[in-house]
Image 1 (cartoon, rainbow, N blue to C red):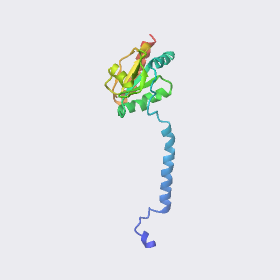
Image 2 (cartoon, rainbow, N blue to C red):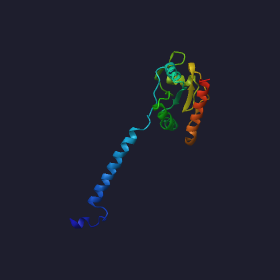
Image 3 (spheres, helix red, strand yellow):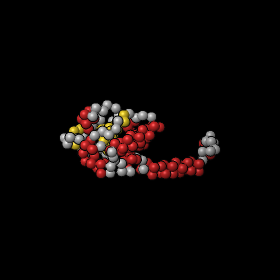
Image 4 (cartoon, rainbow, N blue to C red):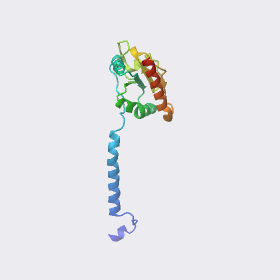
Length: 169
């Protein structure tokens, strides 16, 4: 039996293997809390845009509507790095999905699918952020596309500041 293991390198010992396994399990277990604190994979989908706008107006903030596309890496970056954390802190943000047949009450009070709203708004790039005020009025220029990740936050903050200024008169 001893001759069978002569070709095994000295560093491959039972103690070495067990300690590496333990470190691997420890590393996996310590990463679990970080995963549970990650931003949500999706933002809330509105059932009624007029109601969402009303909630936003009560806190004197613009309603940010993210038009997203399933599988879009730029949408994921915007959602997970910027919009998700903002939404968790209470900022009024909802998501409308291109090509989705989920129904939502539109700005005129009629029911539409997400995809119909996207077409009505003439949005063709994902992600697109709309900054809505009273009665669904667009307060500032839309943010279209992913921009450079290093500058996305700065552009977003700038648009929010401009929308607040218009909203608060």
